[in-house]
Amino acid sequence: MRGPFTKEQLDLLYGNSEDLVFFMRQSGDTYVYEYVNALCHTTFKQVLTGTTVDASMPVPVAKEIKKQYRIAESRNEAYRYRDYNLFSKNNAANETEVTKIPHEGDLYLLAVSKNVGKQKTIEEDYLFYQSLVQNSVDPMIMISSDLMIIDMNPAYENIFGVSKEQWVGDSFMTLPNNSERFLTRVLAELGNVEESKRIPSFITSTKMQAGNEGKFSVSFSPVEEGGAIRAFQIVYRELADGIQLKEELRKPKMCWKAIKTL
Picture 1 (tube, rainbow, N blue to C red):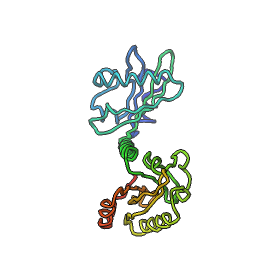
Picture 2 (picture 1 turned 90 degrees about the horizontal axis):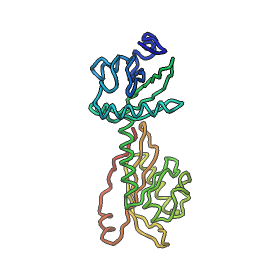
Picture 3 (picture 1 turned 120 degrees about the vertical axis):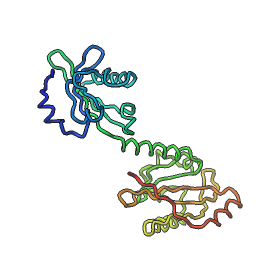
Picture 4 (picture 1 turned 60 degrees about the horizontal axis):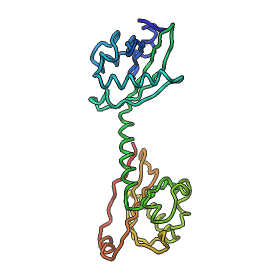
């Protein structure tokens, strides 16, 4: 093989790696595989060494991969990108780090590709959850287990007249729309959640941005990590008329499914 490394050296470093490792030489408009580790052979089910990127994968995928490699060539440091196409049949996603290595007039690229399929799933779930929260007409606020504000949606900002930018990182106990009576009830209910995992809801009157008070059904969902409660999502459902209020009062106490982080 050509390049600054021997096959033995690369095998010593990457032969048993759980990541896909490609060592390539730039050749015109494509890249020649000078070395790949054992996992590459298992994944691609073909001999890659000596072949090109274009010959080893479908044209659209090769085009995208080469585009990323050219970006790496323009950088003076390692370049990372996500690949959701090449390994889609395996229901996986990879993050690849590409390092350029000039040697004796030739340009080589070392690409190390890690499976981040689980991380991708977490990110997608989080984005979906955030979309639901941000677009909800119900005010929602997330607080840590020590009652610090982590997040609030636009509905919460608009209805209660507070700014997320101003209040994130401050104590939930100091929000101007929270009365002393309301906070006493919240602390009691959060204690019940931590002790029994039961997720209660209650009816309360809370001051709104316009200055008047509105009636809300308030419910809590714990955010768990490693079996411990790290935060709480608090959802306010406005009860605009007497009928809604009566319906809410008739509802039995129930357990809400906890939001779990992976």
